[in-house]
Each structure stands twice: as structure tokens, then as C-alpha cells.
Length: 374
Image (cartoon, helix red, strand yellow):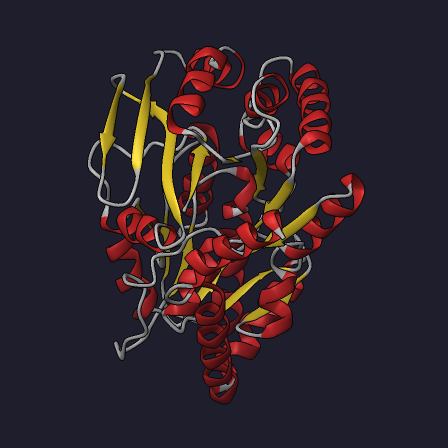
């Protein structure tokens, strides 16, 4: 089997979750899997299906990323030589810089894959406030152009943007969703009520839009079900804005329930009628697959990564970004038509099973290997 390295800053912890173990088990059917990432201590742990090499994480966030992406070459080179790494999958085009340099200087036979989760720069710059943002954008563009030009393969989670990148840089490609733990998210027969939002509480997710327009819908239609907002507060000022919207409008049927485990989210999805989204940017939203595995329909913005496949193949009603009238119209149609509810439940389940059912993740990685060596 080929020796595959996942290179990125994902924190798996010293003890793997059942979800990560299942993911690595699928991949281990085809590869000897190695992972290089950050940890609290510098150490290597041999898990059942993957060997993880942890690089000690610097204390400051900027130092962490700068060291990992730009100053980690010597450790990376020695690791790849020692483990005879044949395929390297970089988490994003910036993480691919050191692997590309390694290939050019040490091992031209190694294959470099760049993963992407939608438009990398848009997601980076919309999710975090960065000092000297224009300089960061210029540097990220130049590095991304260099790494995409010199990689061997592009793996994406969303079809349209993946195809655009592959065409632009004349690369072979394969697209499939990020890992979803199908063992946790299950279709059950729990009685359904209420609406869910699931995601980080940040401006890109449009939580304020959902609060305002769900409240208006409730007033206009004498609607009493609750909206539960599940997610981590990652932006204090934006979170306060959302809380003030609820307080100032005396809204009583919207609750922030905080961050939940995957098992808790599965239970919430299986007992809810509907998931709602208002994102301005997405790759391929994992939450829509998770909701589909629980046969929970959704209403979401008509943007790249959502319109296809979810809007096109079923399970999701679409509305134009920030179009309050369309959002409320879709809510009204959904709640007034039981046959539509059942149809969307079935379509969401079928699509999610197709995208992320048992063995699909490992099989997709096997397809990448075939394309790399055909």
C-alpha cells in the first residue's frame, strides 16, 4: 500500500474520537496513513489506523500558523524521508508550500494533492479579522498560485469551484464531501418540532438575518414553534448584536443553546422539522449532509456549494442571499404543505447517503490514487 500523509493544522488530540477512528479505518483499506499536525507536546502516536506526528504548538496563534506553514521544512523533510511518504495531501494551498518545496528539492516522484473547501481566500478573509488584511490577501494569492501550479492533483468538496481550479491550472481532480460520521447521524422516528440553525456564530453565517426574519414570519403567521441556535460564539461583538436583536424585539421563541457534541446535534436534527441557513460563503456545508442523514430538510441561501448539489438534487429549498421575502415565503410554503415536507425529507436522506454513506470516503480516496497512478 502507498504511504499517504495528511498535512495540516487539524487538532486530533492525543486520543482519537470514534468518528476520526472510523474515518481513518476507511482510508486504511487503501493506504498506510500518516498525519503531521500540531499538538501540545512533540510526540508520535501510533493509533490503530493512523500514525500521527505532533509538532509542539507555539503559544500565539499567529506564530502557530507561521511556523507550521513556513518554518517547518526541516522536520517535514526528515519525516517524509524516514516514512517513505509517496502521497502528500495538504489541507489548503498555503499548507502545500512546504510539500511543494520538498518535492522540488528532494523527491520529484512524490505526489502532492491540495485539498480545498470552497474559495479558500474568501473563506479565510471572511472568517477571521486579520491585521494588514490586504497584504495577507496578496501573499496568500501568490502562494496559492505557486502551489496550485506545481501540485499534481486537486481534491475539492464542491464540484463547480473544483472544476474551475482544475481547468485554470490544468490539473486532474476529484471532488467529494468532507468526512461525515454516518455512524452518529441517523434517521430516527422521533416526533419532530421546531427549527434549527447549526454553525459558528459569526457574520458569514447570517445569524442576525435568520433571527430578524424568523421573528417577522412568526408575527405575520401566528407561528409558535421555536428556533434553536446551536453553535460556538466565535465573535463577541456579533454575538452581542444577535442577543440585542432578541432582547430589543422581545422575542421569546428563539434560544441560543451553545456548542453541542455530534451525538447531541444528531438528536436535535432527528427531532426537528427544518434546518435553516443564511451563509454568504460556503464550501460544501457538512451540516446539510448531517441533516440529510437524519432526514431533516433545509432552507438555505442560493450560493455556490449549496445550490448544487443540495438545491438541485433535493432536500433544500433555496432563497437569494439576504432576500427576506423569499426566505419567509419558503418557510410558509414548507409549513403549509405536508407532502412537500415528506418529499424533502426523503430527498435529503437519499442525497446525504449517496454523498457520505458507509465506505464512500475511503472509496473516494482510492479513486484519487487510481487517477494519480493511471
